[in-house]
Length: 450
Image 1 (tube, rainbow, N blue to C red):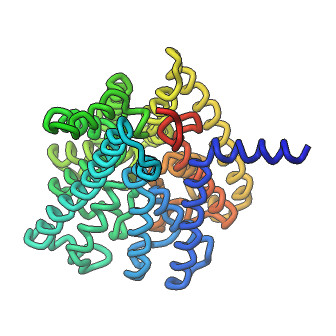
Image 2 (cartoon, rainbow, N blue to C red):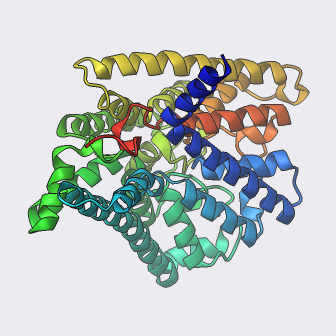
């Protein structure tokens, strides 16, 4: 009957409320961002929406030359990257739960929980702010005072970018793993600058892939240095991190995330040596190592590139498709399995996720291939199918790398029909939300018993 149906719908909604609110938060801001950019730039709405979604989902794929965007449009992209970043959004569940504990105004154990949530939120906000601010200051001062860095800004396309705006934009873009760059050629003009690349590489891992690992270390340090009520509060978090925060795990899951990162990064690093005498033949050994290191760090989630990916071998591009696809799995499987009280929860979640995701990726590739099947301009373009698969995998992993399109500075998406661009938009949104905790996760159940 109708009442039972309504109760069932209401129950389903509240059980999945975190995912629903999170999804509509993204959709609404993406639509608004697209409309604002549409009012500034002379482009179609599908293109401005694509750019908005790419920034909000911190992907970095482009369908237009971002370097010629008006400064106002660049600022919109800048704030979308900030508002869609993993680290900042991770404090939303603990903040809502803190408000709930403040509202009920009970004493005893609840005071300790309130204090714990305050310490957690302040810690994450300081982590978020200090890393981006420190990298901004380091790169800003370097570009302002260094003759080498200043020369790049004056001669790269576009010319004469303000060093402080470049430093601020790329600090946020790298920390949030967005992959957007103010240069037309992404970070290729900085290919031999070790300071810039090392700062950006640290931001990339601190803001995404190793964020749970670094935060685990910060909480451990706080548990040793804090005293009194603060020490008791942080002990609550340290003893049972997954009951209170989506990105904090027990030691086992933290080591799995770190080990998965080490394995994938190490594999990519050593396989990159196959490109030394091909793609990197014009660089000396030190520069090759630097490129090798940065590109290996960036390919997982950030999407910056300092070399032309279209020059890579087909085998290496196929490797990138695989690593972009699995980039988030160590974290996603950890967050899902740690909410399940089963010994084989990790293996079960891995199997479920892989089987589900492969189907949606295959469907997206198939739909785009049918849409683009009669595209005459593809006849002289090599590896069109690989380019489509690469683009979809990059969008799904919210990575932002692209093989591109001949004689174009945009991602391969820039050459697609509007319908295909819309499919990529859906893939970016779906990919950004696959890492969310499930409805049974204690960290997003606002009123569960403690």
